[in-house]
Length: 86
Image (cartoon, rainbow, N blue to C red):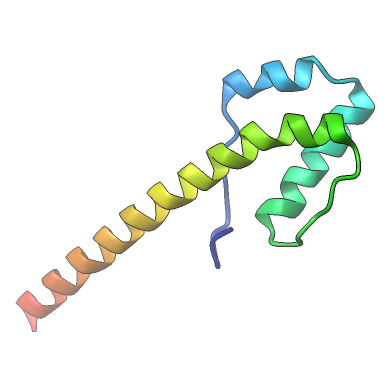
């Protein structure tokens, strides 16, 4: 994920994914999510958990693109303000 990014979002509708899993599978999935967002390059050997993770992974990637866009825009605006006051 993004360097120096301290958080991520799981959405309420993703609860449906977890509801269909056993507690053990849900635990494996959430641990995998945390390893993924912390750039630990996790590998899943369980096909069911991998299938459950894929839509979450895609959403995390979309959110990262949005985050980077906003971060860049804010950086440009901060430079403009800095240059205007200098």
